[in-house]
Amino acid sequence: MWLLFAIGSAFFAGITSIFAKIGIKDIDSHLCTALRTIVVVIFSWLMVFVTGAASDLSRLSLHTLIFLCLSGVTTGASWLCYFKALQIGDVNKVVPIDKSSTVLTVILAILFFHEPISIMKVLSIALIGAGTYLMIEKKQQTQNERKGWLAYALLSAVFASLTSILGKIGIENIDSNLGTAIRTIVVLIMAWLIVFLQKKHTKIKEINKKSWFFILLSGFATGLSWLCYYRALQDGIVSIIVPIDKLSILVTVLFSYIVFHEKLSKKSFLGLVWIIAGTLGMIM
Image (cartoon, rainbow, N blue to C red):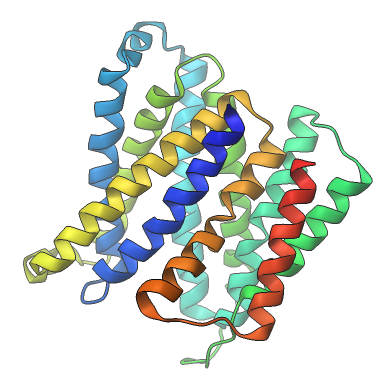
């Protein structure tokens, strides 16, 4: 069953990107993220009460709460480091390092949860890493590169990996819906902290109806993705779930072609094939 939840997570994460791309067209990306997170929080807590998971609140231990909050904090920290790295470094150098979080998560899962390792898993990790790199299209540099970008990019990948590891520990003894709802509150705080620090909140009044509609749809899809993802993490194997979740790129590519008529280059298509092959290898 956890495998189905992992696939569901990938699907909803994929369509999230499509809805967000439409909604973010005329507004600041950080503000869009913060607004979408509000929808995710509401949706997550609605699921908590609908499924009866709220009863677990009385059994919530300090240990669980700490790890859920840490998972939320690392999510926010990853965003901060990622956008800082993009600000001062070359995009075609920063993005591949950030995407390495998938490989790092698998390695950490093997170390912390003693998940089995095999030659097939090692080869699959290599394929996923190489495929992700090929999927990154180089963009023209718009500003001079400054020192420090490498440290921020590496921290972004580390924090993204720690998010999954800490999240799995945090939801071990409680309902995954409740765990997702609690950590999403932390993410909400981090997201709006970014918005207010950058003084982007003043642009809310400039958002049109179309953008609001797709922001809400994006938030709804994000909520479904997170609920499926952490439900899968609760019962499944991290080193398999994370790569499957990253297959959201396949859903995004498909819908991008249908909605935006975007086509893949030969290099990107090869990368996509390698990612799929690596993921199937992880499942096997």
